[in-house]
Length: 634
Image (cartoon, rainbow, N blue to C red; front, side):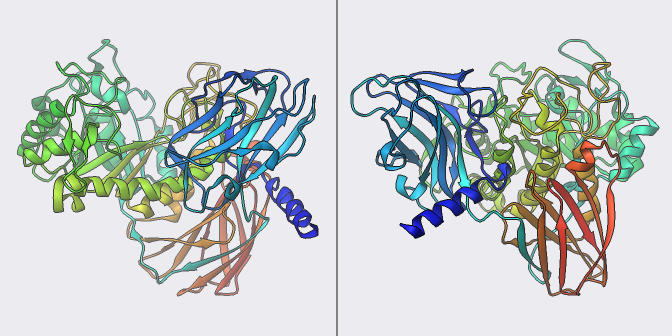
C-alpha cells in the first residue's frame, strides 16, 4: 500500500508537470481529431459547472447510452500511461457508469468507474486516473474510441465530465540526448525548404517582402496559392470563377523566386482549365521568360468538394487521370526537363469515387481517390514525377496545443503508408516516385489563435524535421501571407495572446486595423528562419534520441564535416536542462545558440536571440527555455 501511494503521488506530480505534455480528448470541445459519436442525452457545451476553461459535458444517461469519443485514424498510446478525466457528481453524487477503450475499432472490456474512484461526491469535481493497462490497452495499441457507458439498464442522474486527456510518462525538466553524426540520414535539397506564396498577395514583389524572404532563405516557392489554382487564369492574372484580378502574376512570381534563388513549383488549373492551357503556361514561363520552373502540379486537392471543378464528373479520379495523361504529354512536349506531379491523399479510403479498384498486393477492393487515380494512371502507362499530399492534423474548432505538438509523430505513418500505396498500384515504379508535402499547418481551415501563437512555431519546426526524416522529398509550409481571421477558435484553453488567426508567417495587414500591421513577423517566421539556418542543401539531416519526449533534438552533418543542432522545447512553462552527447563528431569549444521563444514573442521581439556557450567537445549542456526553437552551431 505504501508503494502504491508513493507511485500515485509521483504520477500526479508528473502528470501536472506541464500542460503541453498531455494531449486532450475533450477540453471545452472534442480535441484534435476526436469526434463526438455519442448516443446519450448530453451537452458538450455546458456552461456550468466547469472545471477549467469555459465548457464541460453535461451527461444525462438513459439505459445503455454512451458518451463516445471517436478518433477514426486512432491515437497510438506509446509513451502514455493513463486516461485522466474529471467527474462532477451533480446534485445526486456517485454516478455509476463504465469505461471502455476501443482499439483498432474493436471494443475492449467494460470497466466500472468504481475500479478507479470509490466515491464521486455531489457538487464537486473529482479527478480520475485510469491506467491504460486496466482498460485492456497495451503499448503500441491504437485507441480509436473511448466510451463512458451506462451498462446496467438504468437512468443515471445528471453529472458532468471535463478535461479528458492522456497522461504521458517520463516528463521532467531534465533531458539527456544523443546524436550520432555517423548515422545514415536524409540529404537536404532545396524543395525540402519551401513556402507557399500566392497570386492574391499584392505585396509579394515589394522590396519589403523580398527582404523578408531573403532573411529566411527559403529554397522553394509554390504558386499561385491553394484552391485558387483551380480558378486561376494565368494569362489574365484573374479568377475565372468570379472575375476578380490579383496582385502577383507569373512574371512577379518568377522575379521574386529568382531574386532569392529558390526553386519554383506552379500548380496548374485542373478545375476550370485545359491541358493545352497548362502547356501554354510552361511555354510562357520556361521558354519565353526563361523561368526554369522545374516542378508543376496538376491541380490542387481535386478530390475535395471545396475545389472548383467544371468537369461533367466533378472531383473524379478517373476524369483526372485522363486529364493528367493529356496534360503531361503536352507540357513535356514544350519542356522535357520539367517534373509533373499529381495530387492525392495518403490512404485508400477517403473521398469516395464512382469506381472501385483492387489493390494488387492485398486483394482488397477500394473506392477512395488515391487507389482509383493510381490504378487509372497505371493502366494508361503514366508514372507521375511526384505525388503531392497536404496535411492538416486538426479539425477546425477542435484545436488542442498538446494534441498538435504530439501529433508530429504521425509522419512516421503517413509517409511510409503513402510509399506503400504507390508501390502497390504502380509496381516497382512507385518506389521511385517522390512524395511532396506542399501544404502543412496545424488546422485544415478557419485558422484561430493557435496559428499565430508560439505553438505553431514549435509545430512547424518539429513537423518539418519529422516529415523529411520519414521520407518526404519536398516540404512547403502554408503559407507566407494570408489574412487575419477573428471569428474562429480563439478559446482561452489555447495558449497565445493574439485573439486572431492567420496562416501566414507574416501579418497580412488585412482587414485594415485588425491584428498586427502588414509584414509583422509571427512566431512561425522565426521558426522558418531557424530551420533554414539549420539545414542547407547538401547537409545530412539526422534524428537525435532524447530521454524527454517534450525535447525534440535533430542534427545535420554538413558537407564540410561540421555539425548543427535543432532543439525544440515543447513544454509550455518548463525550461529543460539538457545534456547533448555527440558521437562521431566533436563540437568546438564555443557554441553559438540562436533561438526564439514564447518569452520573446510576448515581448514582441522581432529578432532571434543569440548567446555563446561552452562545450566539452563531445558534450553540450544548456538550459532551453519553455516553448522555444534553438539552433546550435560551431
